[in-house]
Image (tube, rainbow, N blue to C red; front, side, top):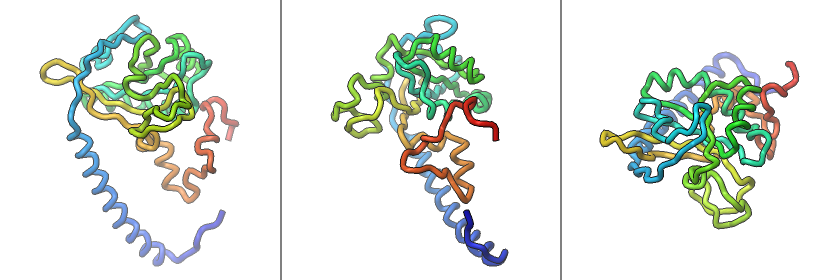
Amino acid sequence: MMGRISTREDWMAERRKLLAAEKEFTKQRDALSERRRAMPWVKIETDYVFDAPTGPVKLADLFAGRSQLVVYHFMFAPNNEWGCKSCSFWADHFDGEIPHLNARDTSFVAISRAPLEKLQRQAKRLGWKFPWVSSGNTTFNYDFAVSFDDPSDPTNEYNYTKSKLPHPDLPGYSVFVRGQDGEIYHTYSTFARGIDLNNGTYNVLDMTPQGRNEGPQIMSWVKFHDEYPAA
């Protein structure tokens, strides 16, 4: 590929214009984040029990003594042998984030419907250490609109829109908080392109001339990280 060739002076002039736009975008993003934090809370009424390596755990246990919990809804249906490669692309970033989240009173966990043994097998293969529990014996995935018995049903609601869906399980993030009253509340969920912000690799690629360099089938290039040929 070849881009436009310019002098350093012309480049600097364009960069300053772009910087002004970037600063405006940052202000808009900060304002949007403030609105996100101001969303109302919904009390969790269901007593979810998940399968974890240590045995059955409740949603409250996943907070690990902290006041906030971020959940990644990892696409891994019970009958699949391996979890979603795109979700695995996101998951490759998790372990480095967790110490920093913990330092800000926030715990993190990935949740999937597949049996715990399958989750553990994939984590071992890919070297992941982050908490990952199975919701297969609960309605958790259905309650948070990331699992569907019939993806072809046009009344399925994902990302706050009703439509037919490509898979029975889909990705997203959900955020929970423990209130001063000791109860657990749901504060936020995001799906589809809403999870882009949490993928560091994509954000780095967005700074390059080629960008993500994806065709119509986005993420068709993504593999488990142990499947890429040596560069």
